[in-house]
Length: 195
Image 1 (cartoon, rainbow, N blue to C red):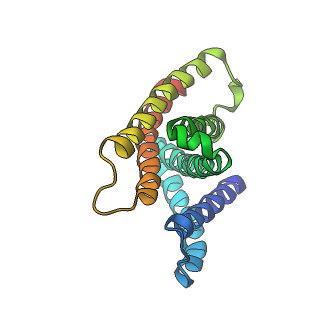
Image 2 (image 1 turned 90 degrees about the vertical axis):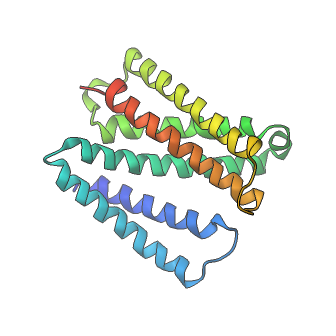
């Protein structure tokens, strides 16, 4: 495994541990600290596993890398959403959809760079207008999926199962990002970065 793979895996594991530790707004105590040890190691082990399988089935290795890029971008999506809502509370009160759109756009940029140059190894080609246009189309559809799912979960069906709105909203951000991520992987693999 390359040095970058290890470092990026560790970073993703740490960020996921941090996300879990702060998700409910209270400390998880010793369990939270254990996550900071377990998740980076698990991330490295999983990437090593998909790399080994990917020697025979490249798609598996690409999917594993795509998941890591997606996890990283999803955390950036969530954290930038929360940050923008904190920085611009009036805008948040007006429409959380606007803030969600900006956080998603930032995540798109991260996904493009990560998937083009790391997941699909398209280093030799640079950025072409045709490829970038395909990427934008794919991700605009992904943005539509992301925002519509977020809107549906937060405005149409509202919190379910007695979950507080603040938690429901965070779950909605994550669910919408995952569904958009599935679309984006298929688009990236079979439309944007196909060889």
